Length: 419
Ligand SMILES: *Cc1c(COP(=O)(O)O)cnc(C)c1O
Image 1: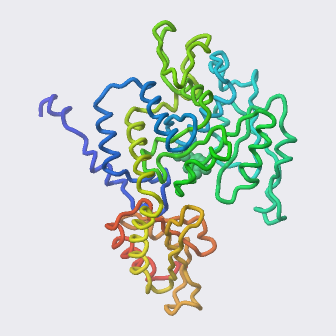
Image 2: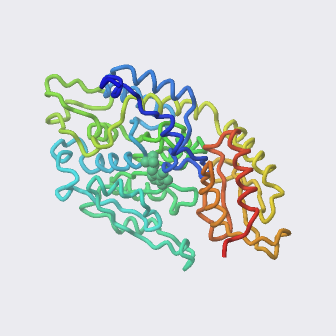
Image 3: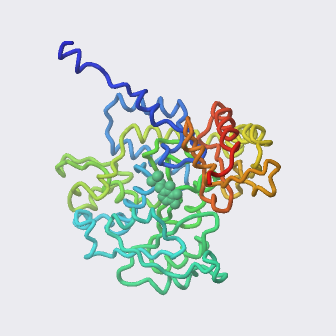
C-alpha cells in the first residue's frame, strides 16, 4: 500500500459511534449525550459549519431571539447552563471593568461573594466558584433533612449581605424555597443581582419567562436538555449590561481598540477603557454551530408547546406501559410529571417476592444493572432505586426503542437476584 493510500483512509466514525451507542431512558442527561436533535437543528448547524461569521454580530442577533423568547432585555448562547453560571458570576463581579476581567479567577480585590441557601448548594455551583466567586451558605434545609418544617428564609439572605457581596445564587426547582420573588425583594433593596440556575426547569415552556418576570437579573438554561439543542449549548439571559459583560468575557477579542467594532446593542465601547483580554469564559467558547443549533431548537421548542410535546412522549410511554404491563415481578404505571408541564414518565417498581405471582425476588438496582449491561445497553433513571423504583423518561427515546426496551425488560426480569 502507498503512503498516500495509508493516510487517506478514514477512520470508521460510525463504527466508533456504534461501539458507544446506548438507549437513553434516563432523561436528557449529559453523560449519554443529552437530547437527540431534530433534523432541522442539525441542518442549521451544518449550514453554519460551512460558513465564516462574525461571532459578536451572531451573538447580538441571538440576543434578540432569546430576548423575545424569555422577556429578558438581552441574552447570549453559552456552552451550557454551567458555563452560563460561570460567565454570569464573572459579569456580576467585574461589571464592565477590563482590569477586573483580566484578574479573574483572582477576585480578591472585588466584590466576589454569592449568597446561597444551603438547600440550593449542588454540584453545578462549581461553575460560579470557577469564576473566582466565593459561596456564602445561609439557612438550614430542615424541611429536606426531615429535621423540621422550614428551609432558608429571606431574612437569612438579608443578614449575610455585606461589603463583599456580589450577588445571590438561586437554584430554581419546582419546590425551591424561599420563593424567588422574596429573594429578589431582598436583593433589590441591597442593589445586588440575583443569578438563577434554571438549567433543567424546561418544560413547562412558561418557565422561559417566569424567573425573569419574577425579577431575576440573570437566568441560565441548558440548551442540551429539553430545548433539544446541542449538548454543549445553553442560554444566559437577563439585564443588558450584565449580558454585555458576560459576552465580553466569553468572546475572542483579539483586536486593537481602533479596529474593534462590537455590537452596540450589547456592548457600549465608550464605557470600556480598553479591549478586554481573553476572559475567564474564553475556555467555554461557543461555536457558530452551537449558536445556529440552539436558536433553531429554541424556536421549535416554543412552537411545539407543552401539549404537543407531551402527546409525542405519551405515545412512547403508553407503548412501553403496554409492553411491560404483565411482566412477572414488576409493576408499571404512567405518571404525568406536574413539575415539568405534565410530561409523561413510566414508573417501574420491582415487587417483593411475597407480593409477586412469580415469587422472583429482584431488586430495582439489580434490574437497572442488567438493563445497563445488556446489548444494547439501556440506561434508566435509578435515583430512587433504593426505594424499589426506576423511572423511564421518554425525552431521548423514539418509537424504535420501545420493542428493544420491552425485550430487555422481559429477559432481565425472568430471574431473581444472584445470591
Ligand atoms: C444540568 C444542570 C446544569 C448543567 O447544565 P449544562 O447545560 O449541562 O451545563 C446546571 N444546573 C442544574 C441544576 C442542572 O440540572
